[in-house]
Image 1 (spheres, rainbow, N blue to C red):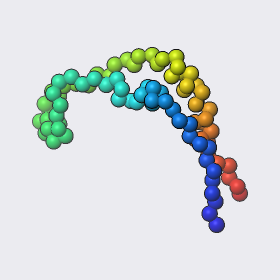
Image 2: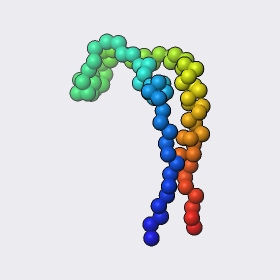
Image 3: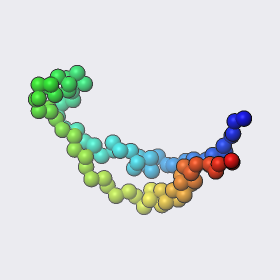
Image 4: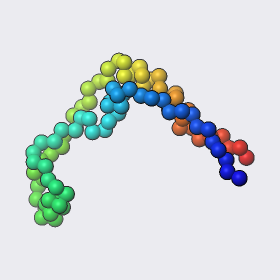
Length: 87
């Protein structure tokens, strides 16, 4: 017989908090863009990259976003906890 687990609901987060969690939000690329084929050919030739990507230090998050993150953290932890085994 199958067991049905009732999971804790995931909290809804604001767009501001979601944006602060985006790992690509502070990446800046300089120079020309190359296709995957061009990149592979350049690597085979051992040529230098035509551009570079710099990850900037992130700006400190706004106070409201920090407060929201602290508020939803316990909800996220509860939602990530495995259900108790019924055996």
